[in-house]
Length: 237
Image 1 (cartoon, rainbow, N blue to C red):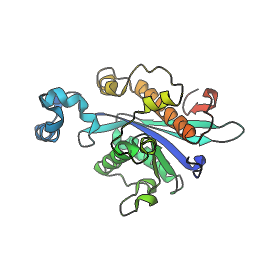
Image 2 (image 1 turned 90 degrees about the horizontal axis):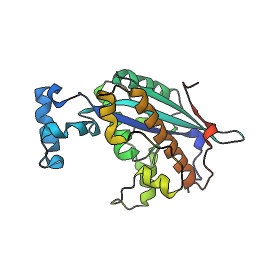
Image 3 (image 1 turned 180 degrees about the vertical axis):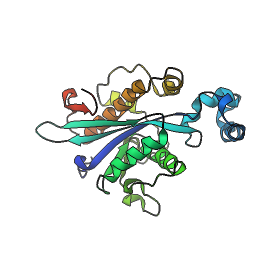
């Protein structure tokens, strides 16, 4: 499976998002009303304020604080090189990420777990809101599905079963992919960012998901996992 892909021309990514404001009280009144309308079906009996900790899920009410990417490397032993684009200034983060993609071939394949429903559209929406031009790899308007160089490890696992959602955590367990014990999960990212001001901790969590997705791709291809000492984090000593 996936033997037709050249892993050296593939970039694995993951994003972490948070609500745009620390608390619901800080949200402008106009957007409080719009948040109420947007989430009325999802939150049921929960008030808009109580539900606001989930605002990072929606690109209209959230923002990206970290994009981690991984590139496969060759040689005698397969490797993975990881870099994170992170910060409090979303526009600057996205500009840097866009510049990186622009420096790569337009044919570069982007891969993420649930990327087609979350990561890719979220990045595009936030780029549009911030007035950032899309790099070629995110230019999908007018293209046929088979012309879009996006891979989704969750979609691949569905095999056409569109009712099926499978978490990355479950798949790494099924395929016996060892993952370090995380001190946070996705539901805690907003709190860790806004209340504990620990962006570096969130980046580490994001990078772990990139590693897990890359390892899952290799399992899909029937290949051996990348060994820990062949995984390099750019910026670390």
